Length: 252
Image 1 (cartoon, rainbow, N blue to C red):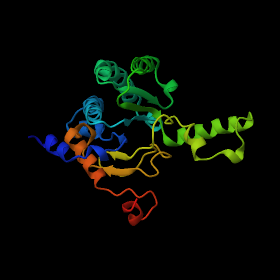
Image 2 (image 1 turned 180 degrees about the vertical axis):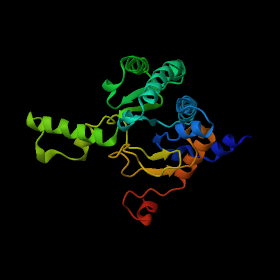
Image 3 (image 1 turned 60 degrees about the horizontal axis):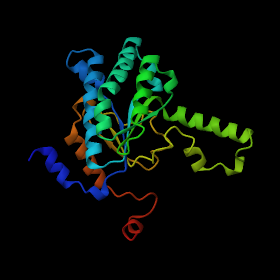
Image 4 (image 1 turned 90 degrees about the vertical axis):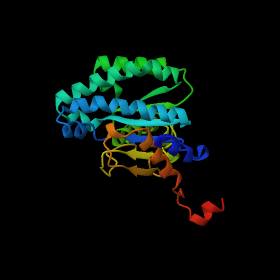
């Protein structure tokens, strides 16, 4: 029995997170450590996306959200941005048959209109072709940031108030949540970040209020199924209190 099988046998299917979010960090450093171009690291990272998507689907996780490209990433060198845009479009088309076969539904989260035309066409086409799928919901965050999303939700609320669809005193957490780009997803139970950094980097700021955080020093291309299983096991060992005491949680 290999390491992954041993880890999977320890996971309690009844205690799986419903929604896992991931900050995929370390592609550039992975490439630099090997004397290669940063784009090669991003290309290698696509294999990790496939691994975590496959395992999520296989073990029954309902929602997986991947931070693929932030609004801040537009400030990177143009050559790297162009490489990323090409890889994102190429990868989604390459993986589409397997995603459909595995019943994975794609959701695009973020300011997709800002994406280059070819990448946008491939992304929206792949999303539409998986619209009938009923298995894993795969959220791909592109040209996204938490502050951007909250700001846009506030703008939508302001418009609704102005046009009389909602009164200011009726605004609550739910009315904000349902105007976020992530409205179709429940809040993440588990947020995983690779690459050694221990920060959120403007990702799902509203949604992760009570998420469990898991940080690993592994760079994203080195994060395999076994490492993912270890993160899931670590999640199952935590007590989620949501503001309650341990005794309240234990006693129901």
